[in-house]
Image 1 (cartoon, rainbow, N blue to C red):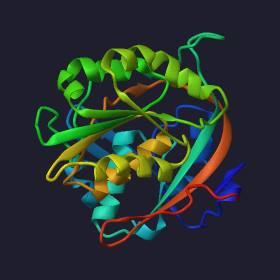
Image 2 (image 1 turned 90 degrees about the horizontal axis):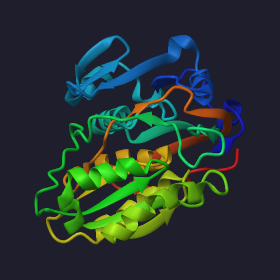
Image 3 (image 1 turned 90 degrees about the vertical axis):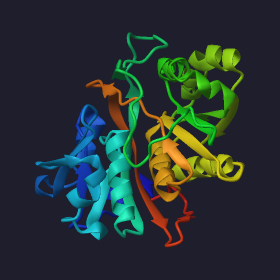
Image 4 (image 1 turned 180 degrees about the horizontal axis):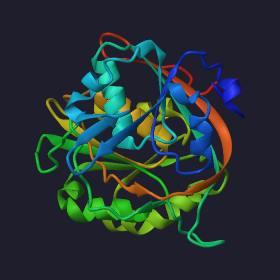
Length: 302
């Protein structure tokens, strides 16, 4: 369901909010939907592959142990503030330990911050040391078993460029670039597509599209690639675009661990990377025991 505020999301009175760092107005607003005593911060450590839940830190391989003390039925993931690695670790731990439903909150920005007024480039994240594996979703891109890949793309073309430079074997695989169309706001799709045109032309990559704020559409996009895999073949997903596509990627990699790995560059997100608060979403994802996603409308009018 969707609405203009947290009040439209029909949140229970006793839920637990797993969240990340509050970097901008929408992050602060999203976390404020839960009382302070119901908020638990998650942080992924890139250097040592650790996960911190509240005040307790363990290897991210042990995320299920870190979350074991929380009632799975009351947990909500706050995807606005959670980085992708934290989002995957939490979703993977909850589903792997018996949860069949995930409740996820996401708040769209009014605007993303540009490097200067009227500029085509955005000030969203700091450069990182490059792509680093996420435990429980490691993929060997040099393996012939890895047949295909999907990049969800946003406003930062250098992130795709770096992947293609660091992993030149990607060019030999069946790779698809996915843009969020329709975008959150009219015109934003061009802000994403135009900077990526040089890479599209140079590497002759395939194009696909899915609604930017619809995890179900992103999941179906991934499913099209998975269903075309050869026998005993694998694929990778690089969720470096809209967060709803990251939500789908995290669940997809959890549902199909034997076929799907993740490629991610763990950017350091800049403070004040967006301004304003737009639509609020509550995504409810149900995974059946046979590990198939139960498709529901990702956003329903509240």
